[in-house]
Length: 64
Length: 500
Image (cartoon, rainbow over all chains, first blue to last red; front, side, top):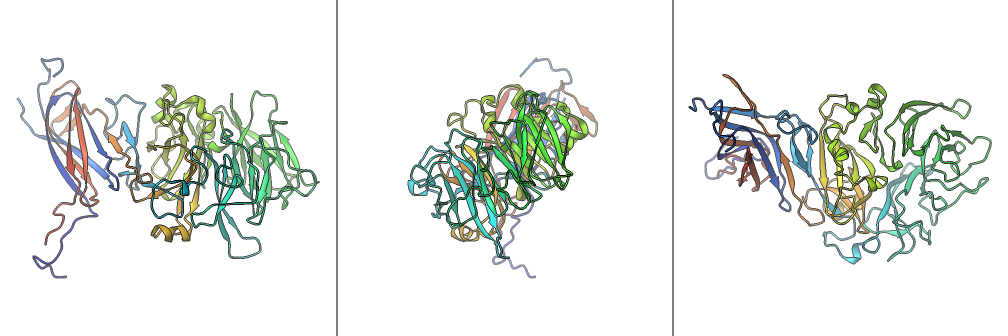
């Protein structure tokens, strides 16, 4: 099969994809919610990752 | 301070809904919310399919012409009725037991699969919507209709219904099961603990020499609430609704029939809440959801309830207990689920059975401690009965689908219409619904340097969502860090989606 720029179509639909969402927050725990409520729209989730940095081992502030 | 960048990945997500455990101690694979989603074979969380009104219209506009009955009346039972007779070419009719005549003649209706409904020739009303015990059993090439209050009747896809012509008339019974070419009946108002069987090869013969009956622990404070369909050559009799007991009915001829108790507790509340699959018999009781195999093997203890991860629905009164007698169950083989229609407290519309508790049989481990994959489907209308129907070719063509013959759930509703599930329209008759999944509260994160514990603070910087692209769509992602939340919209298109 020959791929020709400007004429061939490269499409990954049907396979795995991912989307990174940048967030900002500091705390002890996190919960994540995904929602899809549009008419005629599907959603199929495979998994997730959370990116974080460890902060104070003994937080000074009881809750931020 | 922050000295290392770490990523915590849960992919694939091998876990289902757990509403019972504290969300801060749950494994990251589980969910604390799983609304309007199903689990696919690799445990993907996918938005559930939509519903379409079974009618002659190709659209989903709710109008008087599309109602089976007048609006507001319930459909009480529905059955996919295949009949061979003396031909190798069977005929398919969908039969329903409705609540009242309303805009139609008679209350037992059928459809040949073209989206239209006609009367079977039973001109009177067969009970009312208030009677939630309606049952249709296929037996001897007949559909047998019963609900205890009305004289049972049968229909063979001919011009009118028939009643027994052999011996005495059937007694009024609540439900029936077909086994060994015999009709077994139960729920007799004159004998609540009696299991009675008709003659072999004649479902109408209730008094001849080949007929008989068993009295199942009469006077034990319970009645026979339901009987399973045949399961590995046996019937299972469920007593309830107070204390509960389970009885195994075996033997192949009247001379060898025998009955023995195989379990106690877990009282069944409605014969319609018993669900047969090829590998197990399931039911919903006052206390939870049970599997026959698991209950016999491990006993009637909460750790063996299939519903343990959603036990809070019972324990905290989220389900309306007054409405338990209306619960009905189903098996949907092409989606790998068994489920029950229940009424949540404060449901809208009032007292509507608009939740389906769904248990994935392909992924779940029924043993105590095994992972269970539950989800809750939420509808804007009441689901009063249902049956798995092999999608009629005519209606399949009318809708422009390519699913002829595929097992599809048909719901009787409190809107006077029948709805078919499994529509890729992702709407309920044109009305949007929301799919939601929420992770537990994640506080412990394993890293290469060791586990970051519950009390240690973390600076959260990003969430990566792994998904299957479904076109040019979006979803909403929200997060709560301790008590502070935010949400945003993310694209769900494929990476490098189209390059030209």
